[in-house]
Image 1: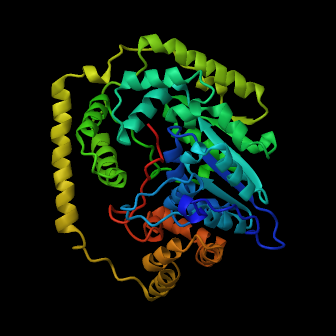
Image 2 (image 1 turned 90 degrees about the horizontal axis):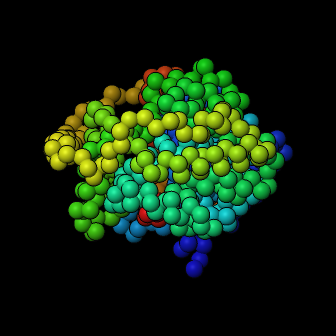
Image 3 (image 1 turned 30 degrees about the vertical axis):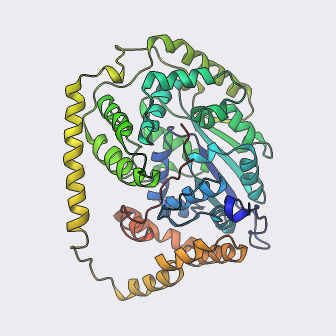
Length: 460
């Protein structure tokens, strides 16, 4: 196969501006379900404020980091997927990061799913910078239910206890990363070893997620790694990846069992996960939280103790309290999702059907009826330049030709013209108004034309 067919392009090392001081690059690689969604909303919502303190975000939106991650991980793309191909995106994003005068931040929680060769390529592509790896970790008793729920939101059908048994059975295996998606992204010490082989230990930062989901504390810890003042950030619009309740998760799991295999994964992500799981089911009042079965609590405690001991013995930079990774005493009764009363599932199904019908009506019959306000002359000139250099048509043509090195270099140059440091700092006012992010994304990030995870981004 050619590099274009596999999505793999050799890492480039000459993206840095000649004669420039090497920038710091912070690579936040995950883990999933450890506050990553909240942190990503926080950094993109405060893009201008970060720029004022010397931290630039390569790319134009959060989706650019996701696309680069898929390219690096060689995630396959279905032919029917309307999203542009992502071949070459890693070199474009890292090329932009290496152009920054002070520091750059890249964040995608699925980077942690890289295999050793892919992680090696990622680190080597940024070795000309002062590279820092950032990993967020969470305690097992809350992590396991969250990961099962996420598996359901990505079309899996395994019941909770069956899924958990598979994770536990794979734990002792030497190749557990290959056997289980959970261990692919949560084999913490293996991940740290894989990503740190060229770096001094103090350039590898492990942030513990505080108990009770204290978002402000997590942001303060993350900001301390970046070396910025956390107090100036506006976290009002930053949100976590909302969890589902027990009835909502079990309803979605059973719905997955009933869905036709002909529905492609990209369609499922856009219409089922984004609308139903994220926008509809998360709005329901929270009932009981999913907990570990009593017979599995001791195993989770043992795994937590092993991880904490290994982190404390390592020379990595630990940010937070490793004791937060140890499970608290179990509280409350245990209720398995498949034991829920049928009436609860019926209520969820009726609500979901009603909201999906309303969403479809608004998409088909009300879209485009509101006229946007006419922009000022200065804004029209700015938008014209943006359209010429990075409008939808230009972007699509360049993405489809990004298997050529010259095109990748051109895209880095275009980004520098449009998003130079002064431009980032001008976004502070937009951050406060909440308007700049939508403009940078090319308008409201709706259903059609958004980038979605490909098959293989998340294994069973």
